Image 1 (spheres, rainbow, N blue to C red):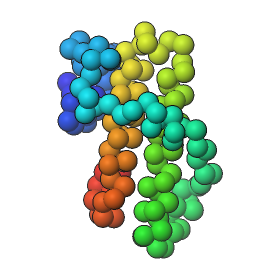
Image 2 (image 1 turned 180 degrees about the vertical axis):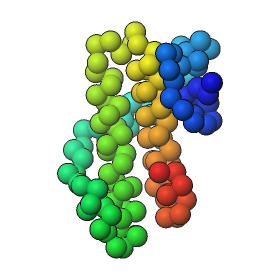
Image 3 (image 1 turned 30 degrees about the vertical axis):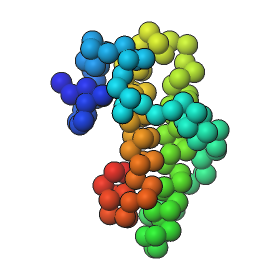
Image 4 (image 1 turned 180 degrees about the horizontal axis):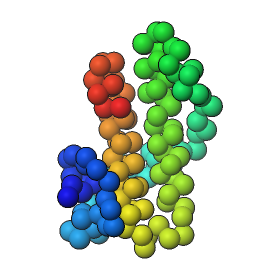
Amino acid sequence: QVACLQEKADFPCVDACPCFDAHRVQDWPQDGRVSEDVINQYSSLQPNPLRMEEVLAMKDSQATAKMLRQEIPVRLANRIAHLTHLDMMENCPALLCARARLVRSFKEVLGAAEMSIEDFADVV
């Protein structure tokens, strides 16, 4: 099974993420982490209300990419923050795994901010 801390996570964890057998959360590799300050900065922003029809109707790929580069990190950070505030978070491996995957996605999207549209699309 592929774990959320591994390079490719092709399917979700079923009962528990295998990476919890090898690592405690505070001992996870640094490259798998994002500063909580950065997550908090983005999670303090409100996502723009946007329907899928509106995104699909956008004709200018540059404008669409710019909007997505701003919007996706905010939405991911808000999901991370909501999970973090759950009382049962620390005792539920499935939630910890979900949060780790969201953090990894958040990090990848932030890293793709300066990429070409094609490379950004690959990350998203």
